[in-house]
Length: 367
Image (tube, rainbow, N blue to C red):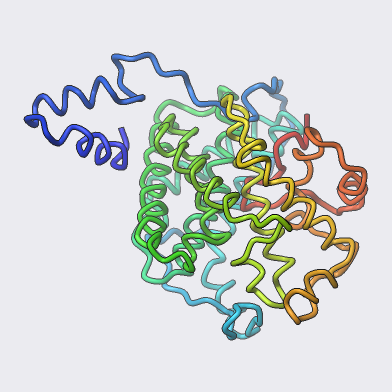
């Protein structure tokens, strides 16, 4: 039972003597052994992968630390202008967690696409080493450190979900990795929950949705429904802000990066919706299917960035037709459910639909 659910349960039964309250909590908890709890599922659980002897060159784990004392790299009030010196310093400081996310997702995708036993072993060895080192599970001294923490959790938790049914990981590895996910998820939720009272803060913009993806994926990995539902609530917090014209107000405030950040905010929302769908929850219909308004705006913006330029008064920092995985990968699962010819063209033209922060290949990419 997670620390978050313990608190909620104790609060619910606070009028009872402590022993009685604890007993009631045990009965009420969706994770209680007294009440059968279905295993939370991921979009990859339904896939049947045959293990092969395809070789895989697994890199050694990167150097681990508990925290990251780093600063951001935007230098204007809209967080739209990048200082190249600060950006280079940030990339150097975050190389190790970035590599862990990249390497684990690449190996997980090699399992999905080639059935490589060696690649699956690589995922487990990387994540087990990180778990035993309690890597980046400390309280971060800066907001940028917290951002890196949740991106790392999102990427590694999804990579784990991709391989968890392979039969390759040992019981000890599973336990270590899940304990690490739980610890990092606690840090992510604590940071967001501490800032929720400020509706203009990063507890309400794209960082909230990425945190929701990280914690919901971790919740599935450790079968913690409170974590999973915290991620679902993050989806709802984002979708509730979508205006009738499809705009996310906090992302529109990013001036020349407004289109980029609408796409960047949309991606975790779509992946959360896919995680929820695997567990019988249709988030695509939530709040009168508002997510489709955001999708439609992003498609229109990619076709004509001047839409965002006129709204913000700043030319958009994006090259039409040259879209990366982070720009367009979210569309892979989306078009499987909601066919869109233009999105399908962009997917076909993209050099890759992978993006490590959501776990590499998006759901449905190899199905």
